[in-house]
Length: 424
Image (cartoon, rainbow, N blue to C red; front, side, top):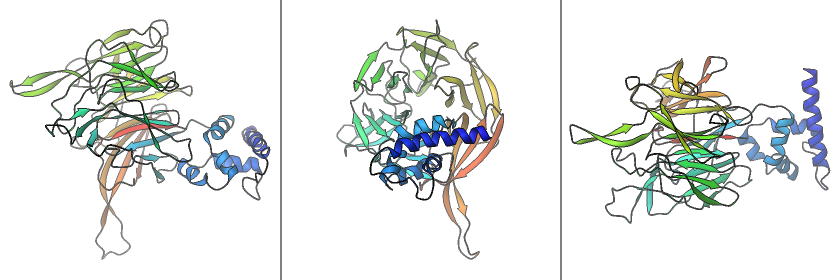
């Protein structure tokens, strides 16, 4: 305990020394040693740090990403993720951030700028690379097109940097191929890689195009680069980068599940043909390899929501899937799924849910309107939107349940909402 406190103090002193070298800069918190003040501000939640940056020059410098990240590493603090939730069309409703360290502290981000002719954006991808949030593609309607009920895929790309004191969305070059419902993951080079997708929209869930195209965004060059296409068209899939699992310990971009074709029920009603297999792109060789079927036809119809847990160095260590009321773990060596745990509270089949990994734990999200207690028994009770987290720790095999109230007025449909985690 003494060694831990001394290391924290020495790290804070090193940072305080660097700050004090700047001329004309006052102490961080009057009455406190600067090393103690630095540690206190480092442990605050992200919403509080964002609000406090404008307090003084010293606080703005200390609460910047360039200062906070080295300090957290020197203090040996655990990795820290934020949840970024896009409740609906991000051009109409602001995305919101939640720091799991303070489940009641939500932070709203600005909505994405858009053309007034476009509306109903859905099936877009949200992914974070470091402290930068990307929003890519999607399917939308265009008021200038005919017929009006014909959705079209989008190639638009936006980025927001949480390290900046003023948050705003930056328009990036468009993707080469418009797409929605596609696989997406941060690339090891610092960019983003996308694969598959199509034009399907939730309003017309039985129709839409598909593509096998793959692109990589180079953040340094600010350009999209086309890479080898998948073996066949695929949409509605999920993607992640697995390190050292390919031939010769090659890093690979994995694409799982989705749908690749149509069939008809009774010769009239179109129905998807779901993929039971996975494919992987070697990021060094540029070649795809087919993984094969991950389950038998009688086990399940389709791949459920997928969440990946990464190690301290960012390498994917575990892949999990939510299937009904059960969580399954993927075994890379046997290409199969095994049951890991069962939800503490079952979710009705008519209710949607979100599934994501943060800080080494798995979060299952549901939303509902719940009555709020009033000060007087004579007043009519009001209902307020509540977001429930069922949190599972795979290492400890333990569950916990959290409830929070996001700044949203209507229940969240997780079939159209988007989730991503941002590592600070």
